[in-house]
Image 1 (cartoon, rainbow, N blue to C red):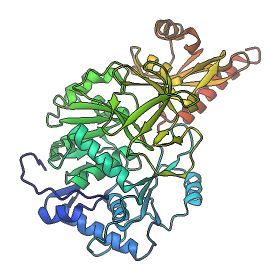
Image 2 (image 1 turned 60 degrees about the vertical axis):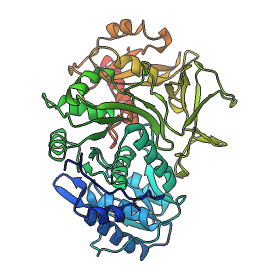
Image 3 (image 1 turned 120 degrees about the vertical axis):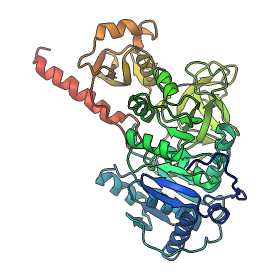
Image 4 (image 1 turned 60 degrees about the horizontal axis):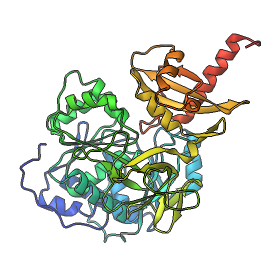
Length: 490
């Protein structure tokens, strides 16, 4: 599936998602469009399938209806998602990992007109007239890292404008072959697949995240661009065993702060890749991008992406100067419409600006540094503490693979800081005095955790992020077991 050097007609730009597919099919009907493991769709097959599904949805649901897509990863999920966009419906992309009670709560809140657990067999059909660019087409759900998933609603234009950023900032285009290795319930991977198909670049995906299978797909199809979370990248690097993918020229990393210790292994695996780290949110799309050809300061997540304006504000809404920490506010054409379900007081608007409660500061050159999230802020011994700062300090220590910090109830301090860790060497117990000593040069004394707990298994959300509620429950259970073992006098 190597695409470089091939002459290819590029369709006229479209103002709505997937409206380019018929022109792509007409220009090169047999060209590869979508690959999922051993399944393959050509441009003509994809356009015919999406057109048929769009007609089927149009005959069964009213315009703007919510269509729940409760499917596992695969071509059918992609085709139904695109059909919802083409037909003017809203695709509600469910996460297969949700417990039945969680799914029931979301269905009660959203009342979808139709719930699909498989794609119907339909004949091909032409595309209907396009919907309005401002019509909502997608309801995604946050990963639930810090609680119950929130459903966020996006319109066509917000993603079309995001596509322009991907093309300008990352240089992605129709001659690329794009791999999005994770589940499409995570917006990062869904976005990667849909953008590739929209511009005519073959999209490669897998039903399950499996490094060996992904290596085979990269080799077989000549992947040139890869979206990944730090966790996924870590797993690929670990399983590489000397493999090198010299054809990968762009690596886009998002979802959490990248562990600097991974850089050497990543370079060995993808020696010719330009590595982009970007910060954003489901509600905001791209906010900042760390470019490989810019002197991004250590600890920064880059400068504002194209079309994005960032302000740092205090609690009264006043703009703060460079170097001062406050709430991050963002204005851009890529912002979401509103929550379809859930939401919280940390997300709010002020004119053209939106915040999701993240805090940070800008330096004099406009580089953004993250401090933490408002909803995770802790107060211990009268001081405000952001767990993310402590987690970053811990992960900078030799041997620490992952870290999560929590504030557990303490009668003296209000909360007691407890760190949950996973080491690369799989050690069963933490050397707590050594960890405290190592952190003294990095953190103020009140920010150093009182306890350090090692775990072998790291709970994750379906998107590959740390499952913080599960980790906090695990910490509470481990400490309770310690107290029980110590007896009443402890």
